[in-house]
Image (cartoon, rainbow, N blue to C red; front, side):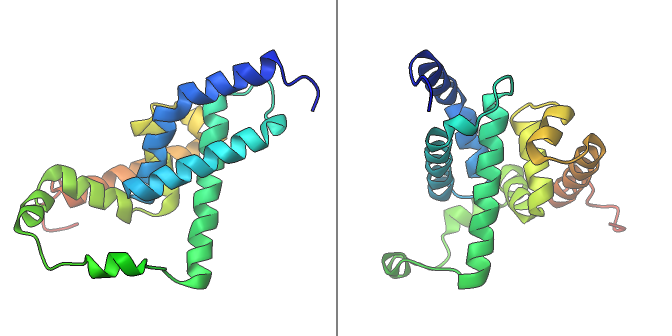
Length: 175
C-alpha cells in the first residue's frame, strides 16, 4: 500500500457519504432491517479492507453497491447449501397472528414491499438501483455488469409484477 494519507482519507469520506444510500439498498436486497444492516457492515468492511482494489475514476457508490450485491448473492448461495438458520431466542418469541399487522399488510405499501421481495434477485437489484437509488440505466448496468438493455428489461418486468401485486392491474381478470 503506497500512501495511506490523503487518498485514504478521501476514500473514507466518500464511503461515509454513500452510507445512507447503501443502507437503503442493503435493506431492500435483504428485505429485513437487521439483515440489511449486517450486509451494509460487511460491505463497508470489505470496501475498507480492499480499498487498494478501487479503480480511480470510478464511482465509489457503484463500487459499494456491487460489493453489497455480490455479498448478498454469496449469502443466498450459502443458505441454499446450509439451509435457513434460526436463532433459538427468535423461536421463543414467535407468536400468532397480530391483528394490527394484518391490517397493515393490506396497505399498498406493504403489498409493494412484499412484491419487491418476491421479485427475482436480478429484477430486485435493478429496481432498487434505478428507482430507489436514482442511478441511470447505464450506471445500474455498470454496477450489475450487464448491458443497458438488460436493465431496461428487468426494470420493466419488476414494475409490471409490483403493479400487478399492488392491484393496479387487478380487475382485468386476465393477468
